[in-house]
Length: 154
Image 1 (cartoon, rainbow, N blue to C red):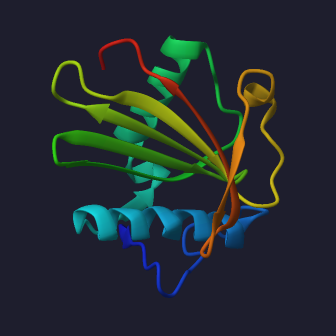
Image 2: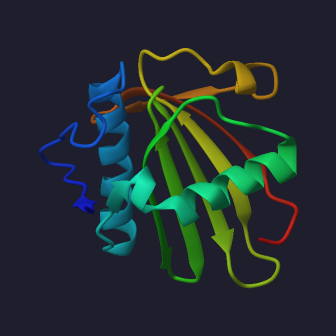
C-alpha cells in the first residue's frame, strides 16, 4: 500500500521497526518537503516488498559502481520522474536513506546520495569509503550525507 509522505505531520508509518524510526520519518519528511516545494510533487513511498524494481535498481548501481552491499533491510522505496530526472529512494531499517538521481538526457547529472538519520552510526559498508557532512533540518534534526557520481549507464 503506498503512502503519501506528510511533512507537516511527520509519521513513522512503515518505519516502525527501525531503532531510529522517528529520525528516519523526519528524514523521509524532509525529502517530501523538498519535492513538494521544488517540483510540486507528492513524495509517495511503498513497502520495499512492493517496490522490488526500485530496490533492485539501487542495489545494482551500488554493487556495479562501488562494490557496495547494504547490510540493512530495506523498509520502503519509491521511484518517479520529474523534469527529466529519474529519482529512486530506498529507506533502510538502520536509518539509512539511499537515493539515485539520474538525469535521462545524456550528459546530465547522475549520482547516488546517502543520508544518515540522526542517532545512527555510519554503516560499516560506507564508513571507510565516504566522508559525511552535517546538515541541520527542522524535520530530521542533524542529517549526515555523502554522495558519489554515477559513471555507468542505468
